[in-house]
Image (cartoon, rainbow, N blue to C red):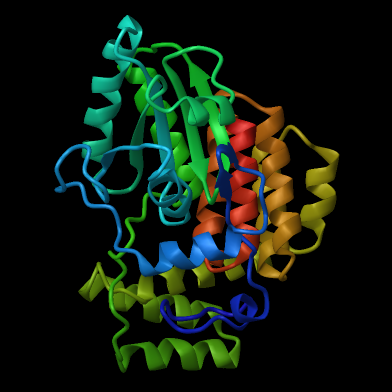
Length: 319
């Protein structure tokens, strides 16, 4: 895996495109594959969600969804940001406790996720297709697929944790349309020349110098993380795999092994190793493994379809 400047074509991404989508015909069929690439294309062409849009309006952080708008506002939108479905009814008392909490959190999210509100009595086909057993029901959709859910009113702290983990495991908190434009910067040439020589220490120092002058530099940050990964992988070496296999409960050993795997191009194996840790641990260990995995997602980049697949599996492991 070679460091690349954000915004430049990644040959891996060009060589392999993920088929993504979902379809709705009367009732909702989230497993349908035929419409996935079409939904992804529509999402790419659509403007990103806006937290400043009026509540309930299409394209906002909080939208009212019907059977007619479900495709655009939920399935298509979920290829930009995660969408949280709030299934409710006017007569439902617990719904009136939970919905305002979710609406407030969505506005706070600033477009990093969308709350899609569905009146189950006005939209019975959606309720049936989503297999709603009771309300309030909350279901998270990412890239056309259900990835997490819960039923019943929960405290705000738990609701906040639900959406925070959802966003971190899917997009890492990125807001569509907020990516900086690529700029030409001669300071990057020295770092890239060092990389060509195989001098990771010099490349790291060059990127750090750029960030010391310009902390928000659009290219140096991700390039530095990539170089630091390569250095960690070099330091870990092949022995990291045997050490991790001998100590499956040692999170530090597992992260070192994952760094070595990713640094040597074994992307899926690196992701799988940390996903296994997330599934088998709890508390601080689980959170450390999750955070490291999300960091590796950022290094590889969401343009790689393996990242999208691993994010969905992370959501399943968390919830």
